[in-house]
Length: 92
Length: 547
Image (cartoon, rainbow over all chains, first blue to last red; front, side, top):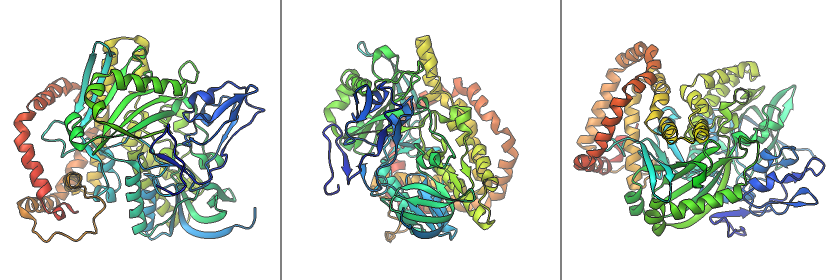
């Protein structure tokens, strides 16, 4: 395992390395606050604030892009985190 | 953006998962200056699955994998399906598709493996062939000139020029979307997999699972697996001294709604691990959770005509594997199709560079070869899993049994036999001695599994001789060479009849199935024969399995 990796209690065996930054964005103009992104996200990345989805944290994100696929308004922009950052596991 | 550092290659391969290294190795072997880009810090960091690579991947895939020593976790002999009607009363039907002993586990249905070591092994082979590997590097855009893709731009502010790009970026396909070649998949074709990895002693895996995968299916009210027809059921993979547990569910249901996956997955996991008798009684006392992960995959892309026919190439770029939508719909395996397509992509790239023509018009031969591949065609268009929703609608027990049997039991052979026979014949036409290579592969893989000997081709040969068993292989080798013209002629004569394989299995099924069951029941009789066979295989000098 790598130095300075972050671990999570909910997802043992996975670590998050480097500074991934914010690689998922919500367009508040397009978002209707339907909450589909909250339902499919297994990493609890989203919250609803003032009837709009908002990134709460990407600390447990495994870059599956489910939020991006599901959004009926195409209000979510998904990109990869900087190369060499984000989640990693030996047990996939 | 400041002036980017420019570099030049013949071929840039995006992604070092299962497909990328296959393409990179072949291009490097052809003498092309090849670069492979991987966004993970090391190869395989980002690849998550529960993984059986079905045997057709090894038989008809790249020769370096067939003839090599890739890391495998366990040979698999088939699938045991648990069709759960009432979890509390234990009303559960068992439907099996399993190669009986003593044929299995030496002649396997497939091989289980962790993704990371396998991808690493493949990438090492590509690097040994001369391909360059650059990790921690994401291709974020392409270089486009006169409508042609002439390389990629990375997140390290590099401009990497190439004559052609082979895109093996995986299912999300961000680069393909950015370049306007493909579009984002709709959520109903995407499944999200909730995956657990448990440590367990090898003896316990041997005793409880042997070499058999376990799948579970049930109607919604059982709350033991994601709703049928909206993804899959539950699958358990036995590895060497661990097991992988996975449930998955499509992101959008038939009613257009998004399921609450966080709630559902936790509920199903809790139910299956506490109420399913074989899990709670036999497995649970011996396991220790090591990892929990999730990943999305594009399982049903091939069932939608429009999605299936989205371009898999453009001027200067070819897409392979999941990036081209080639995930299998039934066994949800992406690896064999990634291998086949990456192999074909490399062939086409080599031809295109030689012809100095990387236009979409030239690269159309890639699409033609992909569409003509019998296994790719079957794997991406079979509706067996998708149609489980009909059992869900009918809510009929016999319908559910029939559909599980068709998709994951013996019925699988009534739709998979023709593509398997066709692919076998195609391979034998190209190389009539391939049957011996297949035989040696099964023996070598079994030897390697027993001895945990992986990726060690470079180790010095053991000084002892070949033995009787080795001599027998030498004899078979010579015989197959001698009979090559005859084999080729026979295959050419029989090729027009391959279409009859599926109907034949359908007709003979009622005879074959009881026969297999009878052989399974006779397993104790074969025990000493199997022990003797295994002992010969694992005590031999591994050099006899070299091709």
